[in-house]
Length: 362
Image (tube, rainbow, N blue to C red; front, side, top):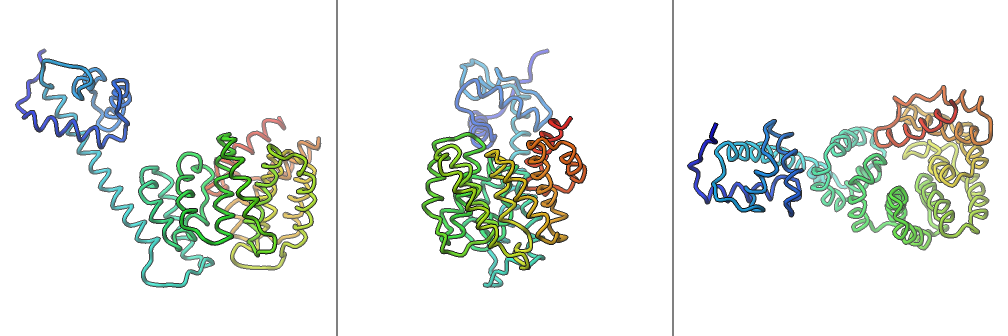
């Protein structure tokens, strides 16, 4: 059956072609890119335009024939769906940016649980769409409220390497405070570590060591991140310093408050983040000691129970016991862990660790 001829003007065809090149979300620079575009158009419309047809339509291959009417119709349908998606994403972006740039109050109370809950809903939505995040990340980072209530509350381990790290680069462009700089650079350090970017990792480690000032007050969670960085950095770049870092950790641990409330001070945040550094550097005796202190010296609060953070601490202790040859004790602790409770920003991260422990226990 012969294809349906079209009566569409060359100008309209050229406009459709240019819109596809601009709006498909698929980089189209070479003929081979039409393979990915063909698959993407099928996913969007449920209709097929072959890669060879797209190569002709987009001008990669010469053709003496005008595009078929069916080709034009599918392209128009594809653009219509994509444009509607972009419009919806833009509306959502505008809403999120407006939320994180409040005009109705000046003082920011980071301990406000109602605001935290609303921001949590925003963070859950943002993490589902990298395109949405990239549109919103700059304006959120420019806002003091956005930095405090998005970047500082929701470092997303499960999306950090994929796209959230770009937002932390923006965060650091605007954050001037000492604690904020320590925090933001520590998060980017983890990204470099996880992707094994050793040059960036070393630069990040040196910057954090240079920035750290022991005479300045810093939140226990951020201080724990500093020691996480120190441990991992020393392992790869200055192993002779590791013993003194370990000694210092247990000296500093004794100074951490046990009876504070609010602003996440009722959770052993120093211990929590430092433990993650100890498990990466395979200091299992120290990991056991610090996780045990965290679980025995601090009262467990409802907030961090439902976020699964105590489960993570049990997991650190179980890992330490396993590596110390105490499998039965490790199994008992693992049986207490409920992965369904793991917090959304690190669910996959800790599920992987739990699965590794279970596999070794089998």
